[in-house]
Length: 468
Image (tube, rainbow, N blue to C red; front, side, top):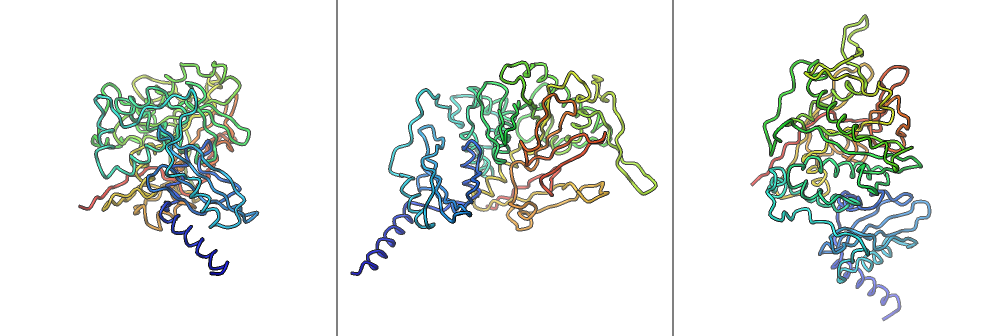
């Protein structure tokens, strides 16, 4: 046998061994696993080539390429004893993709026991172990309905990716504060997706963001129903027929009372917050399906401007009328950002996407697909054409090419995230800190918008079809 034959035999043996050890996984699934990294699935200056897992799921990894040098690198994540991923290998310099793949297989160490916890680190509670608690209907749907398996898998991995969830996270998620905890999981994914370093160094506020020299503390808050909480899939609440009521009435009041309750906690006085930007991130769960239509009330309350459409000499135009008070029963002053006493509140963030539907879609796109399950998303897209006053409608299968083509790399976590900037902020939030969000700000006395995404979904509903 010649040396060449020996080399080919060795390569064939290596390939056979790798095929037995490694299984390919979609890039989007590896991106979810990589949310455990401080900056999420962002590998510059390297680019993604392929991703893999071992058969027992104890390790995942990716082959990356440095386009400037043409060399390859690997990134390997292994499970710890608490199931969290930790970096087991992160290195480059390989001359070929095959060489990198061989190194990847070796670094995954599938026969080795899970990685031990670092000294002094508390083992977090398993998300699905109820310890005899009476669980809420949302949790029961998530864990008991096969059509929500994609969401279950995605939520589980993002929970494991959280830097330091508080001790009440699991019982809250399983009982009365499911929505609040879901909102925190969504924020983590949306932030880290944007190459933002997200940490939880203090008990409050919830998150500390760092990117390109910019910083901001973020406290998550949810607008909840009054009195008894709504459980399970309650019938949708119809959109108020009166536009003024929808913009300046009860929905705006709910936002106002929720934000003011957080403002009263005076986070800005904490030593670690002083001298830094501080934002509240709010999601609306105040009524079934309310987040589909309530979003417009938030900027009305924040800026004290009532948007209207009127007929002008050149056709219909959008204008903004000043608003002193909301129409609701409490007579709450409008224009939170007009109050100089609110200068410590740098911005308010919002998304209407912290839902079962979002987590289900992202998990489905990542390859967690129960047999027979399909998803169709229907909704309204913001029309950025000059002079457009009405949104566009869409209805698409989320696996279709048309749906993927709505955005450069398909659906992302941060596409619905909006940042409303306080024009009087003492410490403004830098636009570059959260580059994938839609930013709203005042310019020359007018409310302006800067959006990274050409296509922005204003509201949507995802329909599930599970063929037997």
